[in-house]
Image 1 (cartoon, rainbow, N blue to C red):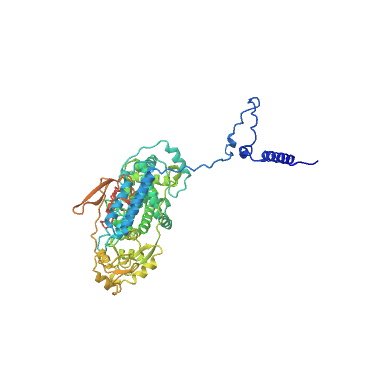
Image 2 (spheres, helix red, strand yellow):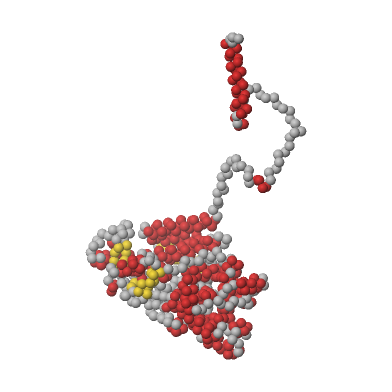
Length: 583
């Protein structure tokens, strides 16, 4: 049959429509509206609920398996007020460092003051501790800038002393928490200790005190600082054959502060009187005091405690004798006929401080050995001190040592707390940062032996002129040129110069803490024509690393900074006949 063109067109159209219909049925649902747009609308079925039902609910176990149709933007963490305050203080501090490095001392002082003020004004909150820790770090950093900025003729080596943590506390009586006894009794029986532990009422009262906000601050400050000396102390106690738990006696005596000094002149981490320390080889000269040397004093304390134990036959009596003296304990035993600490305590024949001294140490020991039970497991302890020892063959200025190893003089002093002057005598065993021995010896070779007690070294910074360097050290520029063999008329950045400075012997003074728990920071304000010094007083409510008792420590905060006199951390202890010095 012959097809006309008209018939062929109709058949072709029918095939195309059929193909579209087939393809439309196979296409994705989302394109349905476009594929069928040219077709007549489909008839709308009558609505009926007869065959309709609610979809089954999604059970909880499958809720997490639902597909995520749209990405969810993570919620942005909001900075707390404490974080914003810390950031503001950091910004001010960093600006102060830049000003200091640029030689703008006045501006640096102002910015450092502002940074400290921001942290001091932190309100009481759960985040207050973070601000306190940063304030302590910032004060130390600013102090180092201050020390580094001092000229050679400045008196930068005044001896500073610290306040013991339990000053006055051992004279006090604290309530007992009845709920503590079962818990502490269980801990005592489960705790491994070379020192006998007991849960008497007096021990429970100190555990209760150290669990309060104020007591816990004292305890955690000491435990944090103990990290610096724990390896050293544990090694010495082991070598001398005494219980390791006696380390906590140092916390009661000084809070692990090497330069703690009592009002009865007991000194050091272990609080020796001069005559008692001399019995155990601790010498005191115009240049140094071995009682302030952590290793020497620890060994002397271990030997003294061992002797007391051999004399009295009981560790509690030995600890009591360490506090008030063996003569005091002997007389108490002779008067009563009892050689038992708890009996002597109950009969009130021991000084009140001594009667509380042993229970306080036992309380600290129990809590430190069970840190999780008392919220102490998260303490960030200080890093152990590490150093090399160099024996000096001539009297040497500590500032010269700091120059040679390019470290702050404060760091050299912290490694050598027993030195009372800014110079170390010939024959002294000087501690320097670990790994710095070679640099020190190489540098000292370039300084005449007879000049090492006064001369300095200086690394030239970018933009420094010879005149500026001479002014900084109070030395004529011509003398600097001569000391360097005339080869540095125009010093360049990176050059190391010998500085023929002079050393002024400081007059030794001991300044003790005032009774009022305040500290003063002085700064200069006013116009160029008339500047006045304004004293700002801040209560020491919440800031101090180097002082164990925050509400009694005295420490000037950093408007002391930058070429002002370095402030003293001063102390007074309430240890009557304290430590190894009592009779």
